Amino acid sequence: MSVQTETGSKLQRILRRKHWLIAVAVLLMLILITVIAIIMAKPDTQHAEVFDGLPHAYSYLEAESSGKVQLHMMSLAPEDIVLRPAGAPLRQIAAYGINGGFFYGTDLLSIAIMNDNPSGGARGAYGSGWFNAKYARGTMVWDGASGKLSVQVVSSGEELEVSDRSNYWAQGGISMNLQHEELWVLSAAAEHLPNADEQRMRSGLVYDSAGKLWLIVTPTLSTAEEFRTAVLQHVPGEGREGIFLDGDGSSQMNADEAVLTGDSRPVVQMIAVAGGK
Image (tube, rainbow, N blue to C red; front, side):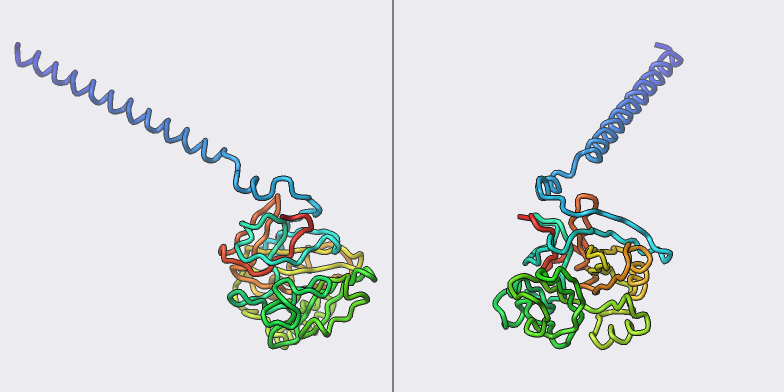
């Protein structure tokens, strides 16, 4: 074999090997693209398992304020609310709704009462949801007998003013004073709103004069003032009033339209849409 022929054969082998490597690389790339496409197209089966078949007794609205605070809102009738224990990240709870009031460990530090029964234990027991711990704080009250919503600043369930103790719910938080611009900063300070001036995820509960209730969560890091301003800009209705709920990583929402997980921490109590499991 001549030197020229041998050189040509080597060159052909190199070219064949190069073509083979290119073909393998292209094949691997096609496989990778196909796998990624399958994963991206795969439905959220866990979401379907958790929420499939639950009553959809709410309407959903999403908005963004001029300050770039994104609001996720669920509106419903107050009689469709259930204040219930959670004990886990809301993502794991088979119910629509949002996080409730403040807590420490497994103890509720905010009122969470339905028909005179706290959601976390016995009446009068610490951490049961019968008290707003340490301070009188803004508490949203649904008086089922009179059909009225209000925000009452109280320390315990005994202080709640309702028509019928067997037909009401009360959810503790911090007063927003949406009708009193001149009062809200002072009242929030008096009620010891945590981390008011820090950039945190936040949540709230708002009603209007027509009796519609709004469950609100923002994943946007914002101050209390920025969140309250966004609420004033985008929650519909006249005569609105409301309360701040727990915030930061506890700001969580389960809805068909959006699942907001906060930092996935366990939440002690939930404001749920009736019909959950």
